[in-house]
Length: 210
Image 1 (cartoon, rainbow, N blue to C red):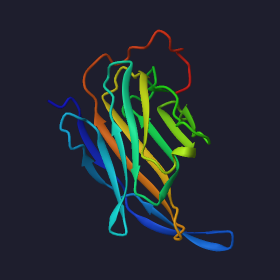
Image 2: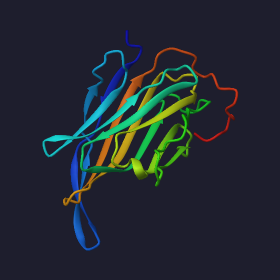
Image 3: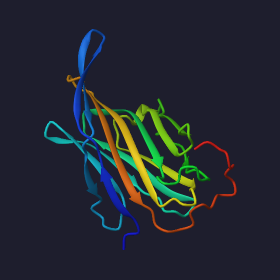
Image 4: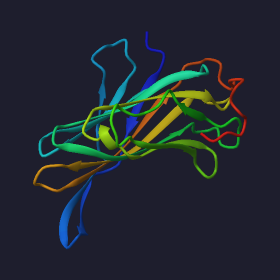
């Protein structure tokens, strides 16, 4: 029996051209993905599937956490051969809890890197108003041409949290003779299961950054 319900929504798609080094390279925005679910019905992972040129381009997936803390979950990106990941920004918010504390707080579950250099550059922070946690991968380094999974932990929830919204923006570049950048944008919304929302790990400082 599934503990969480899933909703997905997105905006529209568009294309822009941006100049660089005296050459105009196409920069295509994809913000109308379709929803996919994992083939294993026991898995809660949900995907935003992006297509380009009539074929699959990338999947951005989230395995949502529960309201228990600490709660492990993951975000992942698959992308087709001939492309490289440039950057990723994900914003994790709990609508309807503005002004309540503690704020949602995330931590990386272990280092996010491979066996070789250059290693990825990643950071966790909060929005200025403190209502959302933000994950940013500034550079993917050696993992740029691979399917990437980032394991995370929720260490604090607002007491009234019942919904998690994950807004994702990823940049993907073609590595062949066709120099093109794809900007992927999408939004996932999860209804969280009842649990122990509002509890806090004893080793987590109350005002630590997300």
